[in-house]
Length: 400
Image 1 (cartoon, rainbow, N blue to C red):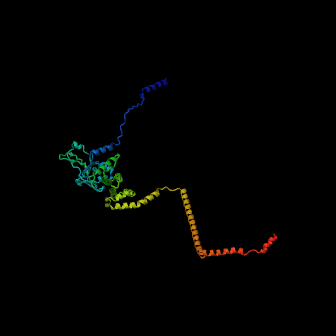
Image 2 (image 1 turned 45 degrees about the vertical axis):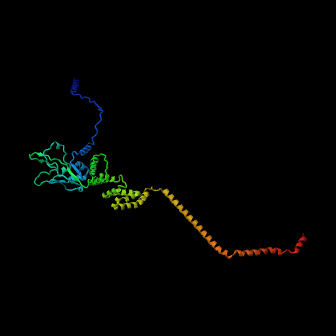
Image 3 (image 1 turned 60 degrees about the vertical axis):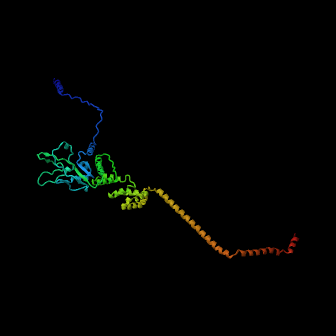
């Protein structure tokens, strides 16, 4: 009974336990396209803000034209501009730069923001304070122990005792040494497009614009943009514009680019003649002198390149060439020996002939001929004078 009772007791406990529901996976296919990944949202957004002039906190002014921009964008691309903004300091009511890393190409043309009454509906949509300029601290005052205030976000106290918000004004920077506003537009398009990973094309309208871009790229320390501007000098090069571009290379110390242009001119004598007759080159005698030097050394360089480009010969071919040369030398030596023998024989024959001629001259032929004529009749008379005796003839007849 104890065993039976124990089994019943366990079954009762099992009934009291809650039963776990079975989990069944349910798959739902929405058949809807997923939203695109918004990795370019930041770049496209900041480019749109700059194009509309919204939320911009700096104005670049050149030749009366103003180009709004964002300090944070300029500082992120240009180390020189970032250092320039770090050294901005308040001196009374004006801004000063303690150390100028941009060699005076930028100058501040507007004092910092002034206090104003409470903000209105229009002022609420105004751009925020500058990113780098706000970090520039004011020199602390000796009268108070309050921390230094920033350049643009300092609040003012109105007459009624209520706090008034300072109207955030854009920092205006005057660009000097630039004569074409198009160069500043190219600078900003490079910063906002290349800086956000968008394809970009460099197309200045003339050499003067390209020259200004080279100036800006050097002061802003944008080496990639500087390379774009330097490479443009050989794009569309002709005898009409080569002198002007050579002058730009000389001014900005683009030695390699200038050397390549000189080599191309030296390779084409017709083009060199046209360039040398250009009246503009007379203003630059050093360029004319270098052109003449490049022409003088162009032939030598071409020959050296040909020697370097020729592949090394195989040892078998070298042996064959040596054998051919040796055979040719032997043949030449044999020919020379034969010619020498012939010459010697001819000389000997000439000497013999010269020796025989005087001997013949001593024995005249006319004197010899009468002697021969006299001897001939003597021979004919001998047989008639010496006749055989008659006795001998008789003996011969009797014997017979």
